[in-house]
Image (cartoon, rainbow, N blue to C red; front, side):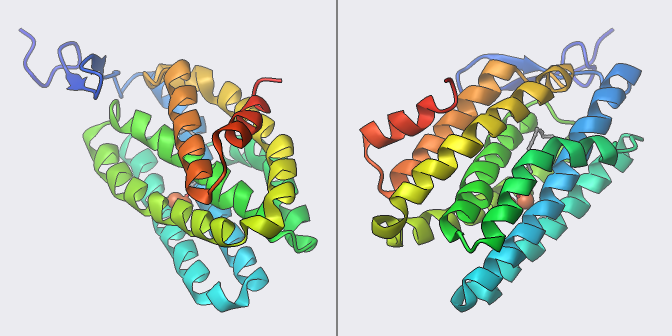
Length: 242
Ligand code: PL3
Ligand code: FE2
Ligand code: FE2
């Protein structure tokens, strides 16, 4: 007889009142998909550290604060490594490096050219919004161990997003044009990353539409916090669809 703990009856309440069914974490199909998703978050957390350190050398006044944010990312990385190990999964790091390649290259180019607004849009706004939205969706369908780790991680990610929002808000008058340009180039990359992860995410019971909605909400909230108006935000969001 199924018990409350059996996968077939295990459900989680999600905010809209519907219930998400938990996947079977022990199947080969789950583990195969998890080997790529887990690698993506491990690689993403490592690159986030590297990116914050790089931004620290562009904004010397905030170097220490940015290095502190970077250290949080390394802690996240260790947490997600533990999640994979707990399920007996080996992360596919080759896949994950390729997954981040185009966005990473754009970040490195912007950092080299001293384009601070672009580096912050990529790391603190786009990547952090991506992480926050995906982690929220994942928390609803994660195994108990990973759920606890991810809940801790997502709280930190808001601090990282907030750092970018504050800096860009303070410098908006001089960097709006750069911001728009960086959005046009990099938002389509996030969209394509979402498309690439969608199949594996669905094996984890994470819905593609929900991932996209959550991302657009987090991203638009961030743009509002930076001080952009509705028309500017709509114009920026359209870069994801055209
Ligand atoms: C910045 O702090 C972290 C950047 C990581 C970006 C990750 C994108 C997430 C893709 C979908 C994964 C869902 C969560 C799975 C957790 C094992
Ligand atoms: Fe992180
Ligand atoms: Fe972060």
